[in-house]
Length: 118
Image (cartoon, rainbow, N blue to C red; front, side):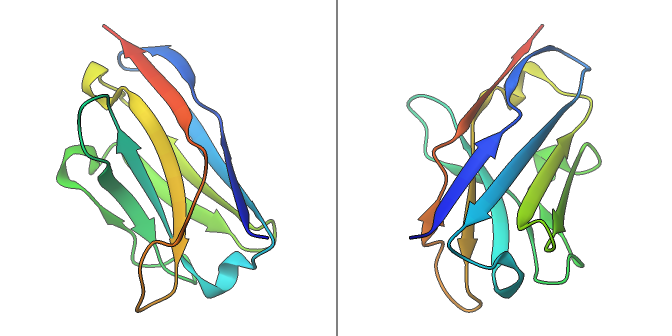
C-alpha cells in the first residue's frame, strides 16, 4: 500500500522559512513525478511545484518562484519543499502527491499545516 507522509509544517513569522518533507512507503519514488500542492478553506487545491524523476527541471507556480525550492532524494524516497521568504498568503495545508508521466496525481499525503503570521 502506497503511503505519502508530509512533515515540517508549523507556525512561522512572515519572512521566515520552513522545510517540508514527504516520505513515501510502498512506492519507489524514483519512478514517479512528485509534486506539492496547497489548499486553504473554501478554495480549490492549487499546484505549487513539481519535480521530475531525476530531480532536474523543477516547475513552480508564479507566486512562489524565487522563494520555494523543490528537491528530491531518491535514495531516501523523500521529496522536499524548502520555503523561504514566507508570506501570510502562503498559509495553507500543503500536500505532496505522486504520478506517472503521463498520468494523473493518484496518491496524496494527508497534508501538513503551514501558517505564516504577519
